[in-house]
Amino acid sequence: MFIPTCLVAFVGGAAAGFPADVVEPVQRYIQANATQDPVQLERAFHPTAMMYWLGADGDVMAITMAEWRKLMAGRTQKIRFEQKIAALDRGGDAAVATIEGSRDGKPLTDYLLLMKLGNDWKIVGKVYASVPRPADTDAATAAELRAVVQAKLRSDLSFSGDELLRTQQSRAMFFNLDLGQLVAVSAQEWAARFDRRRKEGSALKPLSQKIDAVAAAGDAGYARWTVDWSSGHRIVDYALLIRQGGQWRMVNTAWGQHDGR
Image (cartoon, rainbow, N blue to C red):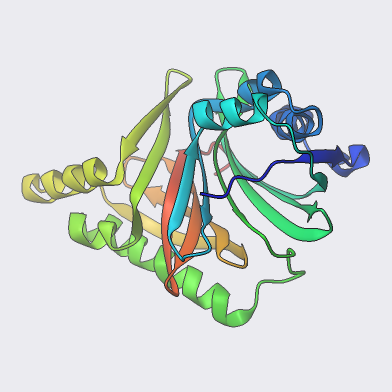
């Protein structure tokens, strides 16, 4: 398993124009790498967060926060990073921040999934790729990402657990909020809930579905979509995705009610 050992130079002006409360944990994350301070890392991320990337052998790799903090605390070799916040996509109480930079002169792109927990934002997931962030996602990759989201949206219509799982990486997690606290549910559990709703003839149905944005750098990416439900709620969803064996799958999905209907 390769885990980057790093010293990060934070480009302070990069956060200009972004909401301060949302970017605060992102800045903490960058500063944690800059100072090799696991306490700052702990403050930036929710304890259940995972970092994902594609290993050299083509397998999806992951590290928990506890493992990451331990590695950071024990670092001896320093590698210079330069990073900045390149983009922030926010919908209600969920967001994705795009971080671009380099590691010892080699390009790096992060996608960070954030949620507002009570009064504070936390990073709840991360995917990265050791490639530069493109100015625009190429048309073929964008089409592949949209196809995965479209399949996920079809599963919302059919409440088919099998169809849902075909869009998910095996260790995927779903996040939402309850009383300002993070609720994490496995993809397998969510698929089981879909199957139960279908059998019970659930009256809860999507009235409209729209893919708002997709972006990728190498084998890491994210997507955002909006669903208006028959309950009267508008839900904005974000997903982090990773491409393994040429196939995109979601690894983290988060959503929250969006009041700006």
